[in-house]
Length: 409
Image 1 (cartoon, rainbow, N blue to C red):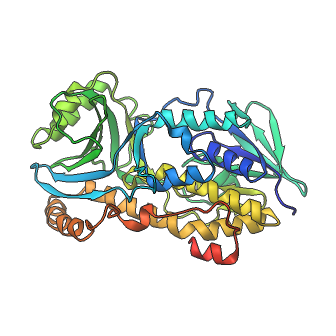
Image 2: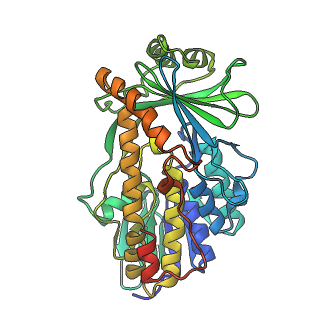
Image 3: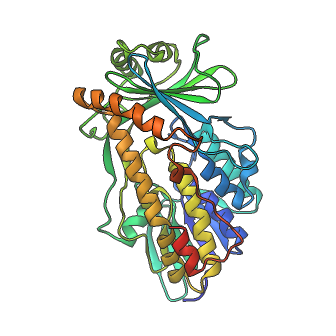
């Protein structure tokens, strides 16, 4: 199998366009194929892109795509439902130019990444739902639901937590794991919300977890994680009305000494809810000419704050491996060696944090006693949350050697 010169990227979310840009920089022609006809449909509300994700974008000269969207959020204050401050941490040391992590709408991130890819001449097609693949000695052909096909040297699954490519690589691949909290969120104007600019406030409420940040225009960006120990049935969450969600949240936050209930009451429009899933360990990330990146290989719960950043890191590392290895199989093996330990550690970190959000009465007491001690021990620098999570530098120009593979695990 000779070196890859062309690639089909399945999925147009975060990992897909970034991978296409990284491959382009590596001299490999890539096209992106997105299943949705409306790529911004059902994207959720917002996310935080941490400094390691921003640095990875800069490694492929795409950092400027973020200009003008989102707002910086450099620290997190934790409170109990009584309003007591449990501690504070930074969200990672700033990059050399002072850049910190940013909070931004998910739809905006997808839009600017696709736009930057297209600006570089990369083709992005929509309504292309992958059904099957055909491999040969010369390449791989994707078969889409609309009857069309596309061929290239390799095919990359950037198609998310319910990845079709993952099941094509391994029909026995594990399914996503339900995490026992739900996700709701929105945007509200609450003039007297006193959260400092550039700071998240995270509240371990008596009955549910709540988080918020205030944008420069005064809008509160908020999310809530009602505990739900059993996985919702298909269609159950979508069938619940905004009024029902609002009433549930108001009841959950009624006894907490925070602004959560007021913010929820002031939020206009529709409230929508998502179940939370992660993907702890996928045995096989690649087979033949097929390979996975991002959530398709290792989805983390939103609690880690690292989903988008991990996908971006994956994309850049995979492109470097394909650039520097003589054939796709050896490139894929190096990529997995460089990424698996790190991403599975991130998934485990996110799972632990999610479980703390859903703690019972005894667990809440223990958490509120222990968390301040943990935060004090790690509050010596802005990188406190924790250092390994955010300190991951990618040197684009460095060849991917055996030593590099070992060093980047």
